[in-house]
Structure formats: structure tokens, C-alpha cells
Image (tube, rainbow, N blue to C red; front, side, top):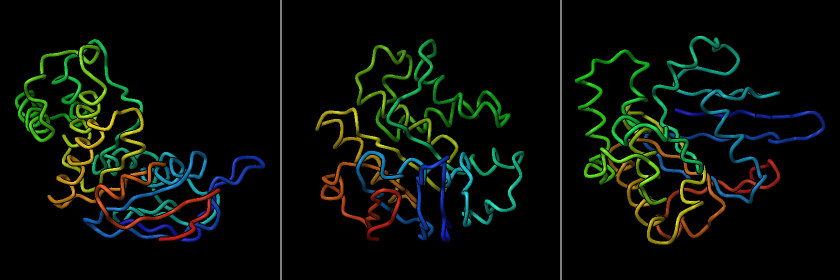
Amino acid sequence: MIELQNVWVEKGDSILLEDVTMAVRKGEFVYLIGPSGAGKSTLLRLIYFDERPTRGRVAVEGRNSDAIRDRDIPFIRRKIGLIFQDFNLLRDRTVLDNVAFALEVTGASRSTLHRRALAALAAVGMTQKRNEIPDHLSGGERQRVVIARALVNEPVLLLADEPTGNLDARATENVTEILRNIHRQGTAVIVATHDATLTQRSPHRTVRLESGKIKGQ
């Protein structure tokens, strides 16, 4: 499903990733563990083609970084759900509209937008908050909306970059359980985090990054 072969990412004199080789199978759950600056976010950006490797090759769902055209990238991204530490919700739209917005670019009908947005909110336990605006929600509730937005396109792959970084212990447990449930339904999940305790809450394969290099997987 995902394969990185001898991947380097260089920016000026800085090496962000150095000779990274790894693979993620369909339906697999993987933790990407490492301190801030280890290269976790860069690796995720490679997977959804927001970044191209300086050297090496990245392949995702049959598309590879050597050959994919810029105009084709939005289509592969529709198969990938993205969750970031910063919520990036539209503050002037309701929870339901925020989730539905991710589908608008696909040209889906209004009834389809509404139905799938409600289903995504139900999956994260936020149906009762569908008419609220983000500023009225707690941090944990906002993150659940972000997860619903990532799920609404029914992705085959979910990428989560520090999804619990701004959350308290209870909200962290809620978000971790939601990610486990998503994985149980067959979606591949990659969670990038500096918090090694997450792997104790939900043990899965762990890939450790340090200074742009894989130190264990």
C-alpha cells in the first residue's frame, strides 16, 4: 500500500530524512515515534504528496513520486484522511458543515453530503453537536470533528500528525479509542507522535525516527 525506498529529503544544508526505507501494508496500524524535529511530519507529507523526495522513491496506492502528475495528486488524496494537531476548522461554519465541506470538492449532491457527514459524526460520537460552531467546543470535541472530517471521504488510509498533542488525558483516551475503531473497520492508520505512552494504550507496530533516520521498526 505504501512503500518508501531509500528516501532522502534535503532542504538547503539540512537533511530532514536520510535513507528511509519502510512499508505499510493495507489495513495496518503503525506508530511513527520520535522527538520534535525527527522527521515525522516530513514523512507524512511525502505519503500524501505534499512533499517530493530529494532522492529515492515513494509509492502510495500504485502511484509513485517519480511519475505522479500534480493534477493527479488531489485524486489520490481523496483516499487519504488527514488529522493534524492544529484543528484548522472553519470557525464560521457549524460542525456538520465543517465535515461536509471535505466532500464538496467531489461534486457530491447535497443529500449525500448531509448523509455522509452525519455518519462520520456518529462514528466519533459528535452527532449531538452537529449544529454548534467550533469555538463552542472543547479541545477534545474539536479533534473528534477533525477526525470525522478525515473520515467523510471513506479513506483507505488515515494519517494523524500528533492527534493528541493538545489534549488532556481523558480526551487523549477518547481519540485513541476512535482511532482503534477506525482501524478495526479496515482502514490503515499511521499515527505520528512524540508520546510513547500512546503505544502502551494501543500496542501496534512502532517505527522510531531520530534525526531523520529510522532507528527501529
